[in-house]
Image 1 (tube, one colour):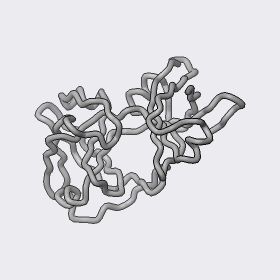
Image 2 (cartoon, rainbow, N blue to C red):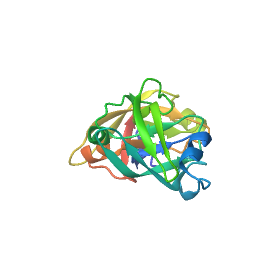
Image 3 (tube, one colour):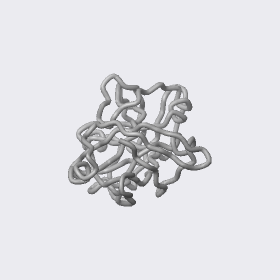
Image 4 (cartoon, rainbow, N blue to C red):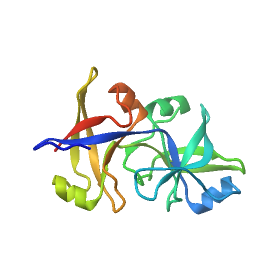
Amino acid sequence: MKQGKEKIYGTIAVSNRHVHLTKENYEKLFDEPISIKRPLNQVGEYAAMQTVTLKTEKGVIEHVRLIGPLRKYNQVEISRSDAILLGLNPPVRQSGDVEDSEAITIIGPKGELHLDTGCIQAERHVHMNQSKAIELGLKHEDLVKLKVENDKGGVMEAFVKVTDNGYFEIHIDKDDANCFMLNTGDTVEIEK
């Protein structure tokens, strides 16, 4: 991150499709404990070694990474391109807001799990902790603009997500990244 006198810059983290599970549902799919493949920047979170298959009547996506630790809710986050492949129309939501979202089946080595609701497209968001939010004059759920300056530049909107473990970075999905020619590690200007 670099910060000028008035301009604020944040680092992009491109988020691929992934799954969050409760302990109960994880144990329906796996016999082994969830294990860490690599830590994520959000403190205490990690990409797990374990992957699952997502299935609908119209399509299948294999090798979808679990994100740990296990949660209090089940959630499948996919991009619009994934949704088209699966024949779904999931709502664009903030993480954890899965009520009345799309149904999907998750297949693991031990069995399969059908979720009547839980599949979403994640809102673009800017992670940060409370001290960073105060420093930048922002608060949880503020809407900011992300100004992209490259050959396919433009402006995206994103919500501020303030959490205790928040590491300052901007999460967008692969479709947004491809549209704006962005990669993990690129910086964009954040406009209040």
